[in-house]
Length: 215
Image 1 (cartoon, rainbow, N blue to C red):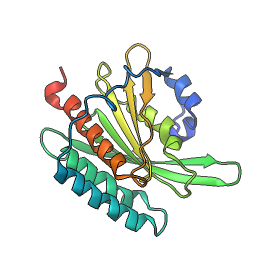
Image 2 (cartoon, rainbow, N blue to C red):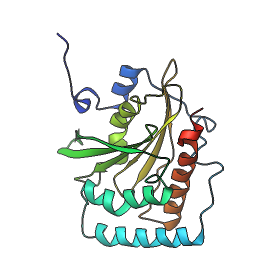
Image 3 (cartoon, helix red, strand yellow):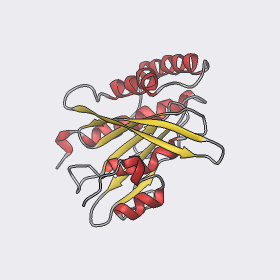
C-alpha cells in the first residue's frame, strides 16, 4: 500500500531532498547569475519607500519575534507589490502552510512555512521562527521540494525564503537531473542597501518569468 507522508516528515535535511529528487547543487556563478548581474536600477522614490518599509519592520521586530502572517504583511507583501507581482500580467495563488520541526540539540523548535506562488515560477516562502536559531536554511529542504512542483520543468523556477530578518533566493532547473543553487543571504534588518538589492532581484525575476518570456 502506498504511504502518504507530509513533506516535513519525508524531507527534513538537504540530504533527504537531494536523494529523493536527485538534486545536485551547482556552485557556479553562471548558473544563478540572475541574483547578482544586470539588476534593474531603483528610483530615489523606490529607495525612500524601502527605507520606510525597513523602519516599520524594525519598529515591530524589536518588540519580539514575528508570526509569519505579520512578516508577510510588513515585509513580503509590500516587496511583491513594489516588484509589480500583484499586477498584470502576473497571477498569484496561495498554497497550504506546512509545519516543520527542528531539533537543535537542546529543544524542539517549531515553525511554519506559508507559500505564495507567482506565475508558477516564483515561489515565496515565509518562515515563522519561534527562536532566532530557526534560520532560512531550516526551510531550504522543503523549499526545494516545493520548487519541483513547477509545471514547466524545462524552465528555471525561483524561490524566496524569509523569516523576516534574512532573505535567501533559490534557483532550480529540473531537466534530466534537478539542479539548484543559492544566492547569498540578505539581511535587511542590518542595512537599507540589503533591501534595495532584494527589490532589484525581485524585479529581475519579474522580467524573466513574465508570460511574454515563457518562450
